[in-house]
Length: 119
Image (cartoon, rainbow, N blue to C red; front, side, top):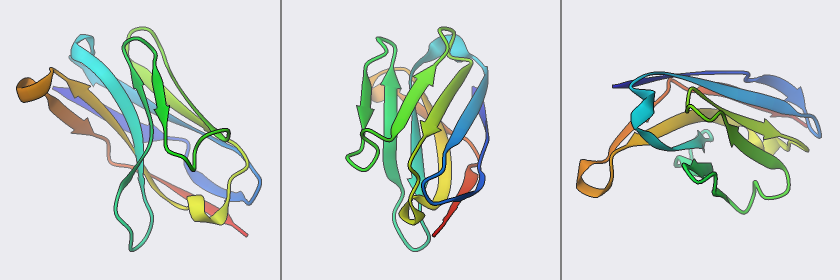
């Protein structure tokens, strides 16, 4: 089991920056990927960024050049540095972690942290 707790959300003016953090506890040695998703009001949840064991990263098009995902070597934390925030970045940001592969994969989710960007 992996437990995830996000922090760092809040209210920021357009153009500002925020750094989200996610603390992972439990069987973190089994984690092989972590990611950030977000969900805006009335919209589906979408991937923001993903980081793997190799430290390869994947970003949604809207995040490229503005957001940076990073992690510590032990998978005990993952961060999302966000710059040049826009009102459309408003939403609840969720941290996820995955253990296992293919049929044995298990995904864990945090409770989310609210990010609100004012215009």
